[in-house]
Length: 270
Ligand SMILES: NC(=O)c1ccc[n+]([C@@H]2O[C@H](COP(=O)([O-])OP(=O)(O)OC[C@H]3O[C@@H](n4cnc5c(N)ncnc54)[C@H](O)[C@@H]3O)[C@@H](O)[C@H]2O)c1
Image 1 (cartoon, rainbow, N blue to C red):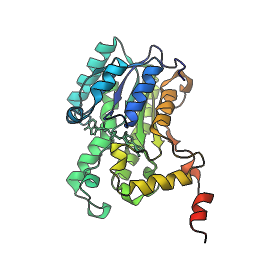
Image 2: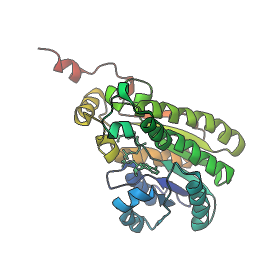
Image 3: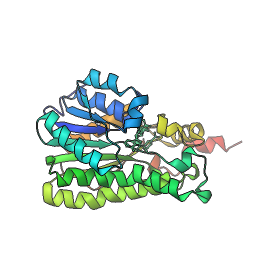
Image 4: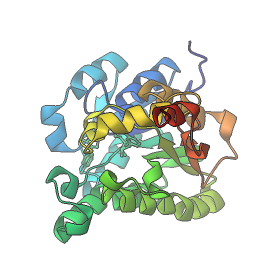
């Protein structure tokens, strides 16, 4: 069901790699709600990805940008304002990658240049995106910027590795930048802490199948899907949440506040 919640709103969506991506589902949902946007991803991902299909489906243009590269981001911001014919109302940062995870390095055996690269891509890139938008004064008042995160920023999930540290940094950037962006330009900055979701980034985490099944049993409402996340993101882009900023918002079917569920107790009861 669509409600026209984003009619007339313009934005940028980072991170649609394939049809499983949270950003992909969000782009489709934003389109259904009347929003228009530019799609972006790292140049290398776009050669592998199917982003062109999504662009066609949603009537969007694609502007490649490596989110660690400030020049790319500045170009993306100015091109987007030009293409969309005015300042922006929403931005989705849906980007994550750990080289240590990819290369199978344990948290106790990090290779620090891998760590630095993963931090730049997954965490510092959010500051770079915000600063590029801020300096170009590219956001309309009451605009909304959302990044995606995971609860490993607060509690330890051993196989999440250095991504836990990256997510903690990302959430802190949302609070710190959110203060200045709110005060000076009335722009909202939030993170959504999403359930484990079967995407390219998600399934890259060791033991993901067990992890997602456990979260399903621990969440009173069950895991939030990528589609659910798209819906929630649309609500944060809409005018219905104008006073929500500097928050880390759990979107996880209740997982984060559940100590133990009956299903999990039953697993351990003979
Ligand atoms: N899948 C999950 O279980 C889960 C749970 C909570 C949060 N998240 C977060 O959701 C976000 C989206 O991930 P997803 O699960 O949809 O996976 P995904 O693999 O579909 O998306 C990750 C995206 O990051 C992009 N990316 C990587 N390096 C980049 C760079 N240098 N510049 C620009 N883009 C770059 C990739 O090309 C890809 O499109 C990530 O921040 C992820 O950590 C995922």
